Length: 429
Ligand SMILES: *Cc1c(COP(=O)(O)O)cnc(C)c1O
Image (cartoon, rainbow, N blue to C red; front, side):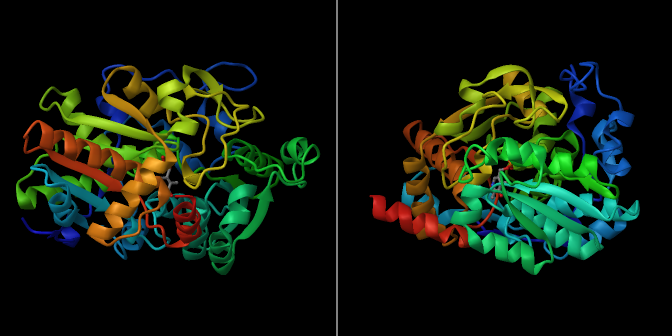
């Protein structure tokens, strides 16, 4: 089998795929935090650029990718689809293991796929500044890059524990010209609620979201940008799966199992949704596995209900699996997976039995990451290592059952800036 599937520019799609067009039943709509009525596009105008609100509400199956975004994508897309022959040999499995390598993006994760769209849409409308939050720093650096590309300022609230553990990401954001603050900060009412109790509060994505939302709503010319969870963001990420589907045709394989790690759900959805449509129209029975950390096990232990997307109650109420808006996940190295909620579309697919969730320990995912590094040669982000661990489990299961299964997973990012986490983890063992 070829180890590397080509990155022919023709595989770069010209439209985003919108799963909503193919769902037999829509998920419950987001509600206004005040009135508890379904949210209208006008309600969202103080928060998001109008172009994004249009993407968010669209029921169209395909939405054209703007030309300037396509040009920005073409610098790093199509990303490689790699046949993991070294990992396969090591595991002695009959399964075919493939991964889409989103670490090839400019800041090392899939997040640029939506960051570039959001910065473009903001710039088109004359938005001066995008405010946002970041956990491990991947989203902040992706938006900082996209802002510099399209001429939009970027203000980032960075979860304190990551700010202190991962200075590399902060430096990267600042090099792109972004302003970065530790969250909880003392510069917003939302941040003060936590900062004044404990100036060393480790922070959480939920709190940082509240701070970024408050900044957008209270300041003229500032809009808010979210790196996951939204239907529009999941749709922007569909370029991953659309490319993978074309690339797989080149080697004549169809996936039996598709795997992604889940924080807010965007990289998983980006790979999975273009394939989910074949299950929905009855043509295939692909298995979809969403992998989360045990200590922030939203899908496997959370409740399916309406909850806020942030920790203060400023965002619309989303119908999703949630650990509760007050839940502050313990500090783990996979900072990008420390979120109390989950994208409503992913939650809906889990609830309807199309996606199977699993939760893994930090020990297990670091072992998987090391095996992957030693075989495939790529240092994965600790977030992505969750998907690797599940792919290994599936490959070992295929060996037990002597099945030539096709396993496809999303390697959502590289771990070069997480190198300290690897050092700490190897000392622990
Ligand atoms: C942010 C991030 C994630 C988690 O976010 P999703 O929206 O669930 O994709 C996973 N992997 C990497 C490398 C990330 O940067």
